Image (cartoon, rainbow, N blue to C red; front, side, top):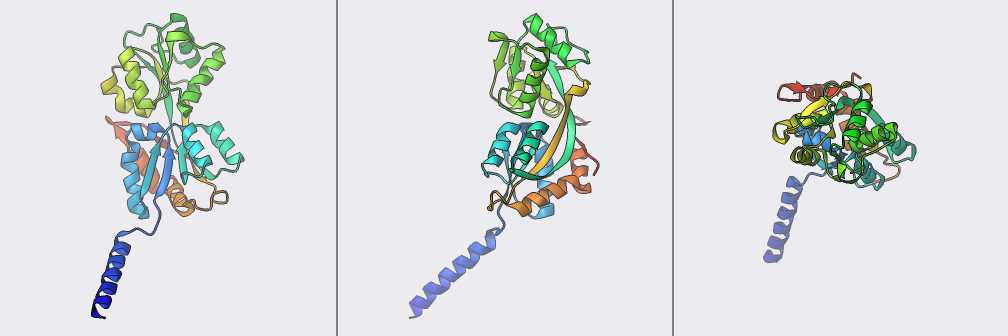
Length: 269
């Protein structure tokens, strides 16, 4: 009898111990574009949100297109992406709710220092793309259905032509990997400013074209629709959305810098 009671007490103590260490709240699954990860932004702001919300965040860093596909499948709780037309479609099709503008920066055209296409200093991204095409200079594309990939392809579409053959390399990789590849090949590529700021010292590329209004790059946060996927951590998604758009979140975003340069600019709400 005493042995049975002792065994029961051991089981009860073990269960109590597990309950003490286990967090009853599920982790928040955030799918986001590679630029927020590669730039280092998430390593700064996610711990601040976790401390404020008492919530653990699981980050899945992929292109915006793949992030939204994860949302469509109900595999994540919230998205932080930068492909506005696709974001609007995601919501219209019933996959997402409660979208908010979070921050913005811009795309830039980067390339080798010798600039064989002679695009340095241009303020017209389409003219720069034409020169790259006509000069037969190598261009590395993300090729991963990301927001950057879609923006790049919209420029080729606007000029009505696109490089072919060995001139145009589709990497199917994130921004950091593409910048590294372009550096190794002395090629051009389209990058978000933040990732280039983090990778610039190691890739040997230079910022050649900036300032065209067509290079504007806004980011939005979207909760996956809990009515469609009842298992979604809707409460955690709401907490993140509120934090990213309140004073504390905006301050954390604005305070993130690489080599002293502010790379993301929060919207005023």
